Image 1 (cartoon, rainbow, N blue to C red):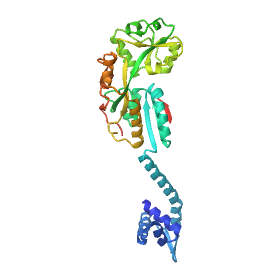
Image 2 (image 1 turned 45 degrees about the vertical axis):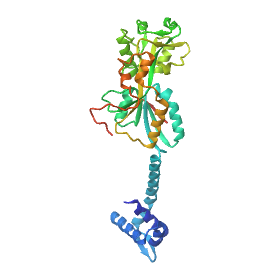
Image 3 (image 1 turned 135 degrees about the horizontal axis):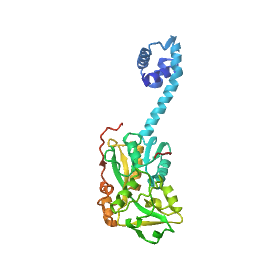
Image 4 (image 1 turned 30 degrees about the vertical axis):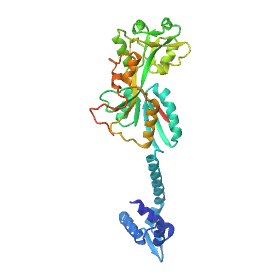
Length: 342
């Protein structure tokens, strides 16, 4: 059933004749006649009977009239929605992000973006790198912000900035008097860690074990905010992103760790085939790149800070901030709400 046929049908009903319907729609009368013949053939019934110069609806025509208004209204709404989506004024953007990026860096940008695009529906899911990259790979999220995903994740990774980790400890702790800490200082100390599978924890354990320090103390807390409160209560020392540690909570202090490279690249993950996003998603990606992307090469940052980048695969992988890194998948991936998924 073609929309133009329904439009001609409605015009005939409203005007009472084929001639006036043709005048209203700026069609030739023969065109209106052909439309009705095709519509009646498709529906296998007669819609009109002639009464002199006017036409009258049959029972089937009355039934069609009852539904035609609803169908045309829905069609107009759909057409307008499509125009808004094409123009970047409507649609649904599904975004995923890790902490503390979601809370500290992303939320202010999303507020700004939603205020500029009030008709957009935006969903933010918060979780770990594995969850975010998997959701992007399966098509459940349009884009994610996380640390470098697994090599077989089937997504692209575009580095934006470096997340640097620092030690947070109670201000009454004996190590609080030192300006900097080394891996050796953490020997025999209770180090509080995030959950298994967290990219930050994996980096901490790998880097400290290489320095002869095993950070596992048997205490795992799955939230940076909980870690901060546990440190404040005197439970132990936490190694968390510096952006989340500063400013420190009352009765806690932040100390840098030297002789070990605790920095992790954070960036955008997306499907390889999404090279030309819609206008709304494209506008969001432009905002994220403009406001989050650091202006120096990630590979050079470690050398300037005095941290060796060798041995830190996340820094090496993100050494070309202007390029997209393709992480192939063994299997083909199918192609403001806030949801927290752990």
